[in-house]
Length: 294
Image (tube, rainbow, N blue to C red; front, side):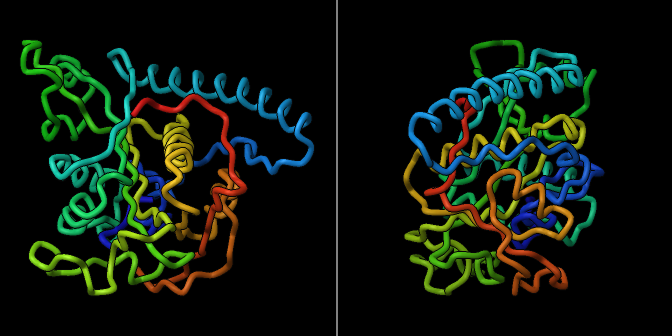
């Protein structure tokens, strides 16, 4: 779901998990393995409680397995943490996006990142891990140079390095459109936004434009882990009614497995069109898993 400079969810830079050579959020490798759908609709209270208990156990196991899969790839202790992105993360986001999406047309532009991280950073999240300079030499990751020092008092040069992100905006409409993927060109000087483009502050639909995972950490379930944690966090905040994104046809089943419904072909024309609308209503969504700490 990295939003090509247009912010399409599930399309390159549009809502596709992006990772290196894998296809953007349409990220082929990143989403190859799909878990069972863990969406529950309450029927019988007692039975539902039992299902949730079993699901929680399964998801803790999956969570542990995914972190173990990542740990095997890196030469340092992997303890991911999540936090809202800020404008100070602009360079890291752009570097990650460029690395995750091989097609330049599917990348979010630096200016669009600046707009989104300024207008609605509270719904844009990054997954970070602490990396020492020596470890970065053993495991080269291009977001390291743009990262920030963890604590100036540590003295070991440890940095908080971005390894994945989800970037979104709000909308009053139920699906992602070309207008929601766009941004007002005068956003630095014109406040409030009256252009009808980009972020709608009071919107109850979260439009996911970019899901990017560093290519070196793809194909080990990290994209799915991040998305579930993000959806759980947004639902818990009670700040939205639904999430929406667009994707290509080969990703439809992947998003269905995460609780999204396929609404049919999208009218969005970004990148030549051919997208599909996907939406997840929080009133019928429940996920039982450890949430990456924010």
